[in-house]
Image (cartoon, rainbow, N blue to C red; front, top):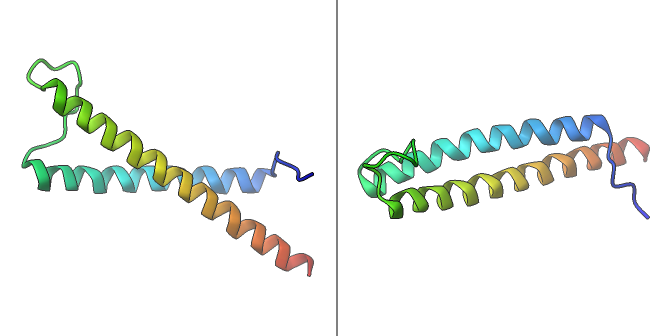
Length: 90
């Protein structure tokens, strides 16, 4: 059975990669939202000037986009670290 705990370096690298991916993805999604809708994405979901459809749309796009990017970045970072560790043991 594999050790699912991982080591500190792997967790730290995964966390840094996830944060960078989330930041970059938010920038890309914001730019895309502006290009498609012609306006800034909603910054305050409680603002009465923001329609429910627009607020929900942005929440879904942002949530799915960022979580997907974080997942892929963490997996890529830990895969690279495992490959490097495996190469060191050979």
